[in-house]
Structures are given as C-alpha cells and as structure tokens.
Length: 258
Image (cartoon, rainbow, N blue to C red; front, side, top):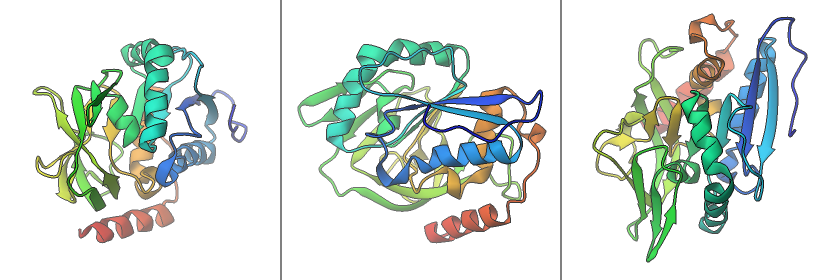
C-alpha cells in the first residue's frame, strides 16, 4: 500500500484505488491526481486505500474501485505497455465490465486504446477505448488547454462543465467512428490538433491528455470520479469549502484563454 488515509466515520465507504506503474508513469506530477483523490475522501470522512501495481505483477480487476495510469517517457511507456498486455489487460477488462473507473492520462490514455505507433514500431494497447495513436514528426501539441466535457454531475462551473490543464504530447490520437470524446476543445489542441476533440470516454473508462496535474485544477472532476467509483451521485458527497480549489480552477481557465 502506497498511502493510507484518515480514519473513516463508521459506516462510510472506502475508495479503493490502484495506481499502475506510479514510479514510471508519473511525468508532469501526475501522481498529484492520486493525492487529490485521497485528500478529498479524507476531508469527508470517507476511507481511502491506495495500492500500486508495478512491472511483473498481475492485476486483479475485482478489488479496486478506481484504476489510474499516468504519463511517461516513450521508453518507460514501452516497458509498461508490454507488461500491461502480459499481466494486466485481463484484469483491466474485468474492472471495466464491473464499472470500476479507469483513468488514463497522456501515455496512460494512449495505452488504453488499440495501439501507439512509433515510427515502424506499433505498441499494442489494451483496447478499452476505440482509439489509435501515432507519434507525429510535427511540432508537439503543447500548451494550456480547456475543454467542455461530456460528463454530468458534480458541476462547479455555473452550468459549464469545463476541464482546464496543460497538454504536451507528440502523439496524435484518432477516435473510432462510435467512440465518444471526453470533451470538445475550447482552447488548445486536443487529441490531434485538428479534430476539436479531446480525450475519450466509454462507460467509466476515460482517457485525456490534460496534465498539470489534472485533478488539483479541477476539483469538481475529482469529486465526479470519486462518486462514480463509489456508485453514488456526486450530489451525495458532502460539500467542501473549495474556495482555494475554485480559484485554482479559474486560474487554469484563464491561463488557457477562457
């Protein structure tokens, strides 16, 4: 177990999180997303358990509510991709069938799709999202980004469901014909710099290129993920004093040009 949480109130649920390759897939402070999930559970008196699954370890898809994989350098991503296929693909598909939340950021997002092509090499993904990614020789898609998202509930944006963050990727991701994007680009480049789409979502499996990290800048989305993973409506979560979190979100939106 990587980290525990404050003692929970009697009868309150525990969010069980599994981080895949937290030491290798942690570029741009992606591990901060896990810290936010833990803190927001602890502040509400909810239990929080964080475990890791690394190279060579088989993944049991039955024992966690939320699975998370961050971004990494190409070399580390290739190592993790081979291990995902050998040791974790079956567990992730089991998790998806039981509606556990699976969140991939940047490289993690790419590995949730069918493939990531690097020159003549094609890296196989776990095919939970109908996306293909090709590393482009064009300038990287980099900068602040804001998207209007397709999820519902837990809204803290005066009716606008907006995620704001930072993107930095050479991969160009294309969605299959029936694959829903996570959102539509308001400012920034998104999946491929031209489609106007960002990320992908199928059921409770989500992928996005938003770093920064994502959840400290979008506390409402952290709550949405927590509620979704626990099988409750976001409105059932106890409200928190989010003055600092709201200011952080507004700052990220302004940085993106909103």
